[in-house]
Image (cartoon, rainbow over all chains, first blue to last red; front, side, top):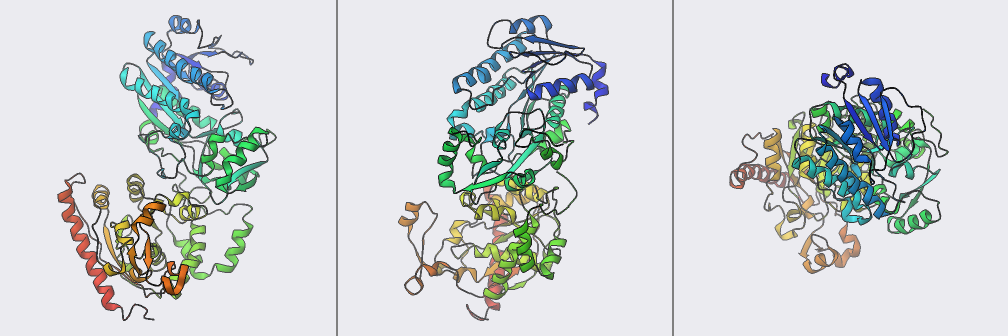
Length: 328
Length: 294
């Protein structure tokens, strides 16, 4: 779709605010938006910005949970907000995750409304649907989110998604795009379930199960975010990558050794291995090595004109080796 | 999805290649080449189907189809290209009918069609079976996937009787049970022709004389058959007997109308399919010279 081309966006410079800009997606997105558009970008993070500060970029070190953050909205009045301040690391205590992922998000949405933001892009994730035996083979956006039903530990992910969804329809002046990308991989991505799972040379699998896995390259995620920001659209979109492949095929391509465990023992084996640091598969993720959670990307393709730019092989090659090196 | 249909074997598929050396013959190789499907760089379709795996498994089902059940198949030349719904009768406790219809569509139809059956919801919980089913193109039964498969011009097999058909006892063999209406609504919505498939042979393959409902409730199964051959064969009674299978694929039926019409209106159309299917079954029973005929 022509509306997505950088040329068009160059004509109207806007102020775009990115929360959590120091994270992997945030850094890549910032670089991309500065290159591809003439927007002015304000980055918020409670971490410090350690890289060079490019032109048209302002970094403000603030914590969304504390005072000072709203003042950035008040004084800068951003046109668009991309909310990336999100903790997905399950080793962070649940209460803290809830404060950041739900309460801080609520405040950001409030500020967006109060200080005249027109557009907001929220990044949820495809895992909110949960990996379950009764899942459809291709999940549509309107399927109920079942992740929290099985794992209350992860209810903040689902709550975040529901919060955004209810805002989307209650505050129609704010045009919201809620993206649910599949597992994000790439040289800058050092978090997320799949990244953690693939950190070691050997990984636990469920004997006799081989779920289909979807991956998306960080560059394709930011393309989707840019489309969400610039297109006149509102709604929820699954963001799949270039294709789907079985877990075993992925592990074989990456050269990880499989340790197949009969599924009734898998949870216990994983809890043990996780506690002694030999496995990076968080206990709640066990279902994801047993059942598929594959999303359908027709809606984003048709409505936003999204197409992944990387092939499946290129995307897989962007996963760091178990030493942490990037080969491609 | 990636458009090029490239079949790529993974780098370390030693075992798969060794199996291929043993089981692959000219017929299977030619089938693998002719299967029309949209695959990604790794050779999988969006639903997880992997033609090389499906064809490897076909080596086993072909033996069942030709040698064990001595299947006679009529009318596969009438299967239209593109999207199609196969509607078949269901019986015989375990879904041998699905397996035989699927094998027939891939062996006898030209081009070979991979039949996507809508399987029970507990199948994905079974180790090995779950992934084999997915690689062979089988899908957990749900409306949305079925619609997407048809829009992708696939060949979908539906047993509208569901467990009402497969769980019935030998006394009710070849009596069509109540049909669900979902398949007709999908056919109307997607403009899909319907091909009735009369399956003869399946309904005697495990001759259940009684459905032990209390036991079924206890183990959470939809039904618990008590095979007549149990005293004679013991647990082996739950394996299908080598009955003679006869399949009759009917002429494609095309329906038009509102997919959101009332149940009563859709029922009328479903009745037409049921009548056509009953004819196909009657023809098969006529062609059969005996339950265990050669």
